[in-house]
Image 1 (cartoon, helix red, strand yellow):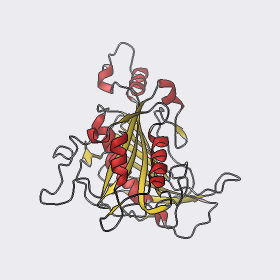
Image 2 (image 1 turned 30 degrees about the horizontal axis):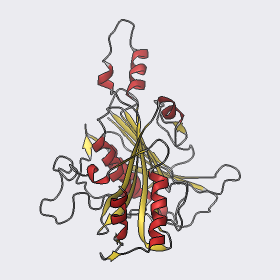
Image 3 (image 1 turned 135 degrees about the vertical axis):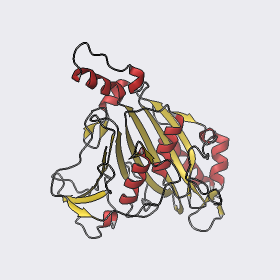
Image 4 (image 1 turned 90 degrees about the horizontal axis):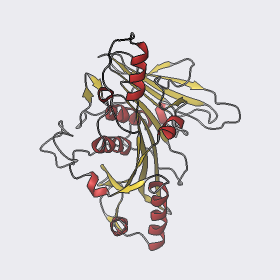
Length: 339
């Protein structure tokens, strides 16, 4: 792994025209330390990056790709969405799951041209919780489906450091995986709600105003299942809105401890019908985020998507004052699908 990392750090691709850059030893060492701190965190085991992509670029994963295109099938997919897709490619399918995705983009120390995305994707298995809920609402003596029907497996967390290939594709530089204990999963917060709760986080109350949603390109990957948007499509939609319709957020000027964006996506957890729900609330909002260019730094701007059945996505926003002594601005987006 160290040899692979040293090789990958020696030549870095910058945004814009493709050309190679050799980092000085001190910068490369600082970048290695930054990667180590994020990837080899307590409880995480590093995963060889090449192994993640052995069966990645296939017709099964990207059924809508252009066979005549010279670009990779994942070109233009943001790092947060690709990280979610990578988790789904490595873990067993779960019919009832919640995803919490944190995303941060920043530059090489003292070398602003090369950016890295630091993404953590945690999947919570809500199948056992859903089965208990069904059992509680089922008359005594009436059998319910076995545990396998609801999904068996632990909650897991993956961490990815990503760079960019030819400015279009998010490439995995480092990756790691952690299996969460039941206690760890129960203690985790998903934007103000327990991650293992049946109820999805709703965001703040207040007066919501209709707004125009950013455009989003047709997906090369599977964007719909059972007539509803997939978790990857919702993630891309949330990211697109938070970045004001751009392919990529502006990199942070320093390596911040907190993520720029946090997404929570719930898949088929509540109700009898197939439903999905998504919410995002970054701790800081850059100028222009969510279409707002002039907003007092002490306020919070939330954005919310909603969709029912085959109706179009609806975007609404609400600016809310923060808690006392808080000087952070927040942006939230909620996506709701219900059959």
